[in-house]
Structure formats: C-alpha cells, structure tokens
Length: 471
Ligand code: BYC
Image (cartoon, rainbow, N blue to C red; front, top):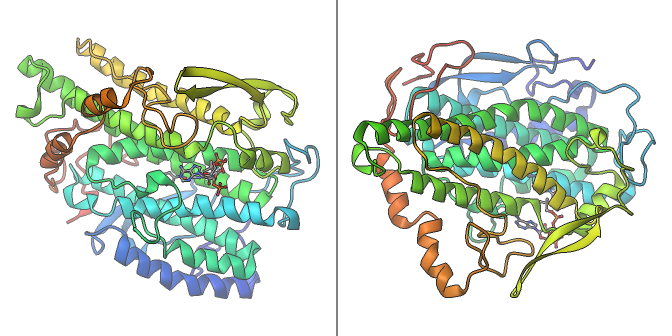
C-alpha cells in the first residue's frame, strides 16, 4: 500500500515529500497549470461552488470525496494504483521478466513520446469544452461537464508527474510544452487530430465523451499493460475516473434519443425541429462525424511504431493477459483492410504489425453496445429508425482509407457523389446552427432544456434536482 499525503500542496501517494527535487519541480509547474486553467479552462462559473468528486486515495472502498468546490481550488493530485506484487511483463520480447521501476535507457525516447501524446490530449479536451458551461441544459449536466474537466486536468497531472519524475530536464520541458500547445491553434496545435476540433455544442460534447473518451479508455488500458510499472499503475487509476466520462457520453446521447422519441410520438412526425428537438438524421450525422474522427486516433492499420512499442513491452493490447496466444505475435497472422481505387480488399500481415487495427476493432465493438441501447429506446417508443455506426472507412484522415471517399455504408464513391452526399452524411452548417439554437442555458435546480430528457437519477445518491452548481 502506498501512503496517501492528502494535505500536501500536491496531494499524492507517491511520497513527494521524500523527493525534494521532484517536489520543487512540480510545485514550480503548479502555478503555471493554474494560470492555464484560469485562462483556457471553463470560460464561466470558475468562482461558483460545484458539487465535485475529488480523488483522495486509491483504496477499494472510498477513493474519492464528494463536496462543493470552486474549480481553481480543486485539489489536483498524483495517484498511482497500488503495486501488484511480483508483477512480471506479460508480452513482447521481455515477457516473463520483472516489470521496470525505472525507464530503461533504450526505451526512453519511445516512452517519453507515449507519455507526451497521452498527456497532450487531456488539457486539449478541457480547452475544446471551455465554452460549454455557458449553455448547459441543466445544473446536473453542468456539474458533469466540470467533473470531466477537472479530472482531465488531473490526468494531465498524472502524465506530468511521470515526465518530471523519470525524464529529468526533458520531462520538465515537455510538461511546460503541454501548457503551450493549444487546441486548434494554427501555429502550435495539439498533437492528435480530433483534439483540434471544436466542441461547440452539447450534442458534440455527449458524442465526444462517448466516442473520443472511449478511445482514451482503450489507449489507457493498453498502457496499463506496460512493463514500465509506474505508467501501468497510473493508467489503472485514471481508468477509474474515465468510467464516469463515458457514462456522461452514453447517457447524454441516450437522453437526447429519448427526448427525440418522445417528441416524435407526441407530434406524430419525424421532424421535431419545430418542437425544439433534435432530428434523428442530425443525430446520425453527429455519430458519423465523431465516430470517424475517433477511429483516426488509433493510427494506421499497420504500424511499426505500435509493433516496436509492443515488442519492447511499452504498450500491450486491451486485456493482454486474457488473450490466449504467445503474446509475441511475430508469427500469428491476421487480415487488415486495404483500400485502393479498385475497391476494398484485405492484406495479410503479422499480428504484431496490426496492433493499431486490433485495438480499433475492440473499440468499435464497444461503441456498438451504446448504439444498441439507443436503438432499444427507439424501438420501445415504436420508432423503426435505427442509428448505425458508419463503415470504418467513412470520412477517415489516417490509414488506408485516407485518400478515398466511402459512403457510410462502405461503398467507394467518386468525388462528385461524395460532395453530393456529404450534406446527408455529416453535419451541415444548418444542422450545427439548429443544434446551437437549442443551446439555451438552464440554471434552475431540477429544470431541464427541452431537447434532452432528464437523467434517471442524480449523482452520488443526490436527487436530480439537487443544486449541483450554486449559481
Ligand atoms: N493525428 O504509425 P502510426 C484520451 C501519426 S485519447 C495526428 O499509425 P502510431 C482522451 C503518428 O504519430 C487517447 N497524427 O501511428 C480522450 C505517426 O507519426 P510519425 C490518447 C497521427 O504511432 C478524451 C504517423 O502518424 N492516447 O486519452 O502507431 C478526452 C504514423 O502513424 C494520428 C494515446 O493515443 C492522428 N490521429 O499510433 C481526454 C496513446 N495518428 O511517427 C483524453 C498514446 C497517427 O510518423 N499514443 N499519427 O512521426 C499512441 O499509442 C500512438 O501514438 C497512436 C498513433 C495510437 C496515437
């Protein structure tokens, strides 16, 4: 068990007090983080009391406290899950050896890169979502937004701790650079594509937390397998917090679907726009957009980077240890999609080369589960429209599909058909304008905007009409 120092300037269970140099370095970074938070974190309600969860330890029972805090006073801490005794490396060239407590010299550059890519997404998402507090559909939703934001901030702390603790000066420079790149910045953007797209409205936010946070789940779960034990333990704990973020997305989209279904029945029409709802075809277009942008985050179908990470033991597969194979993957083969102007075929490669694709497939299967639930809501309301995940080749910027246009049902289409179809397949300016027009703030406890159904229950056993944010 690692001891928790909850009253320290930086709450932690990594014995910061026992490493003065590191403590000083992190305490020097702390005011820069707060300055970034105040400038580029939530654009409003920074001074209000918000009913938030704060991580205070890693134990099975009670790892978090709930209470009112104003966000700049949130206690961002550094927490690693308890070590697993006698843990050994589960995959790659070092399979069976003891896990590492320090970074091996030959993997320094790769590990640093993985930490930087992961760390960069966390503040990016806070920046993307900074305006949303102003148009929250309820205090319940506003609170969830801020919960997600402060925890993404803590996830940045998690990566910055690893960088500063294990990468010395380079790590300190990387930690500063995390606060200097900004989402959508023309000169110094965030590293991965999806984190430079704006999140302009709450439907986008729910889609982002459903689809893009779920990429986070799969990437963190792969890094949890790492032979570098501090990274593994860090990701283990981050995944605990991450579950709520995906709940916000799944239940958020679900509540929009439910409200749309109610309006469709009440007014006996597919077009619920005049009644302040979001039409199912618009919802489908948002699904198409956010799913495809999130698929890009897994990288190309075949990747020597991913193969090297795996062979080195830096990044495994989702639930690596549950898999029934040699965990080396040099001889096992699999097919990956290949797209040319002639059509979509497959190519046979080693499992090792295809790790990005394998993780993407696991992710797609998980995405489908929520879609099935939304479709059950529609079916229960007697509506026969179904929401579908588009083909994995639809609207892609990374990998084999990037230079081709595919329709959502997976047909290769010529440029003119693409231009013609784009407005039916992806949100148009008019769709976005309509959604934006619905984003009127609701700040009275228990009241809910008309485009989204209320949640079935509140947070932490509080009622739905609890004053989650004191306005
Ligand atoms: N955008 O070999 P490839 C989260 C680059 S989300 C821009 O296929 P690789 C969160 C790539 O860097 C999870 N560039 O790539 C969610 C490479 O560059 P070089 C974040 C891209 O390395 C919501 C080149 O293209 N964590 O936590 O196998 C809210 C060749 O590509 C992109 C991680 O991603 C892109 N989308 O795979 C808050 C985990 N894709 O080497 C938080 C750590 C590829 O030619 N990252 N490129 O210069 C990784 O494991 C890998 O870097 C990736 C890419 C899976 C992202």
